[in-house]
Length: 223
Ligand SMILES: [Zn+2]
Image 1 (cartoon, rainbow, N blue to C red):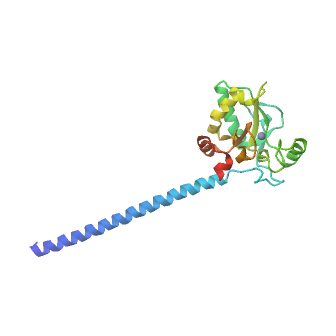
Image 2: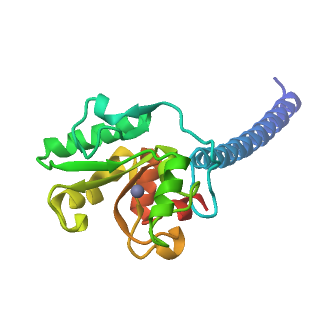
Image 3: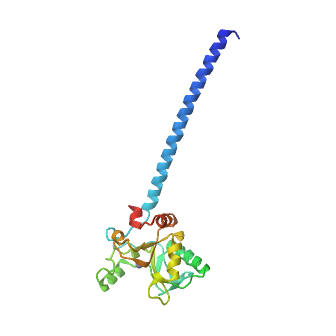
């Protein structure tokens, strides 16, 4: 190789390394863009999951013919909790989560939970509404009980459920099983419903964990 040819080879090598650097730059930009896109998609995915969560309140009523799929009679299912009646229904998924939760409470020696209410049909809510004083019951269609995704719970022989160890356990652990206390104290201006320590709603573990950690109501979470 003479000097001239050597110079040419060097030039060529430099060109190749410049092209290589450019390719690297483009690749890095593409990776960055893909990451950004995936991040966006992940966020969008979370939104999609949130939109699967049914919101029922005075501004978001259910239609009179809304009946949830797969309602099961708790009395006929294996249950680690007590029932105030033999005709309390929940969706199958809500039952499974509740059963898991109350079995866990039992394993920690927290017993004596009584489920007093579950699914309520539009027609039944109409009767409840008619029987109740103003402000004590939701209008038909506006009760979350029509979803079959929530229940009311209490403990044996108590004046106020919020003063019981059962309540304390639920406050600490319900989110792990996908449940939220739907109407917390000091949030009535957001939920439209005053403090109900007994009312628990199934939203799934991911949403429940997020709401618990950030002290959010369902309205705030879905906003
Ligand atoms: Zn309730």
